[in-house]
Length: 442
Image (tube, rainbow, N blue to C red; front, top):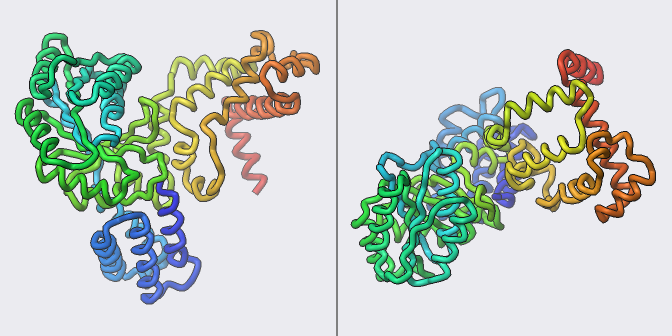
């Protein structure tokens, strides 16, 4: 996500990060490079120019050149301006209705139907809502089928009427169905086309007027760059939507849409799609995204994802096992499953400050744990609970059963033993001892 832009901004700000003397001349040169980096990311020229002008104005106004740490202050100004450009504060969806009605709009292929499912799953799992998905794309039978498949996948009911070609009537009937069956959120998935046309605009405007949604979201493919911004502008002029959803931010996107869409349509980005799975949805936080673009990571989001998977009762049980030296491979496997639920490895590592730069060019496979899981699953229950029983013949059998080598089995055992020792040290006063040891190594 934004790898190319992050790299170019890092190079542009290199001098201003304390690697040389700061002067008014190299501030101007740096901001020229910043503008070029934004343009390469498909940010509108006018917006890129206004952005660098604001940064320069603030930098000179705060006497950056005469401060003790001019580089850090300049980076902060760039970060603050990026945050403001992308919307300032995070904004959620309006769920005040009974039921709350959310209308989804966007072009065909933008990921609208998939995102409708992701949003339903998000509201169900994180907001304790009972959503209903309504299929109003009457032109593509596959779209109705797709929504039903998505609904079944996440355990959310889908309302459709295949014999009806009137999206307004379907939407209204879906809302009545929601009221009758206790659904407190209705997500209406509408038809899209390959390009903006009058017929589509009239249809979605009619649906909007008929159902009066609390929230209208415009879904756009982030990979289309400046085209996404132009399409959002055309939709907003007719529909006056409440917020933007950027999908496919995990793809090879330059980031121009995320950076400039708020400035063009004056509507916030509310959600982003970060993968294909139904839980690959995040509330958009401009400040956190600015941090990531500038290579500062996003520790807050990382902690939030970890907390979502954290089970206090399981943690207590695990703590007791570690204290009694009973931590086994079944427990290790459980920890791996929790990490996998947090999202793709590339996305998680991108949230760690400096990790994106350090791992540049490294192909991070989401199946990184696959061979570890295969080795563990090839063990007997006794071997998983008591790894010390794994002798040479057992290791050979495990390697053969998992399609790996004995060396890989040995390597996993070595890593497991090291981790077990470290976890044991962190128990009670051991954590303090470990800190003292680390201080002594400096």
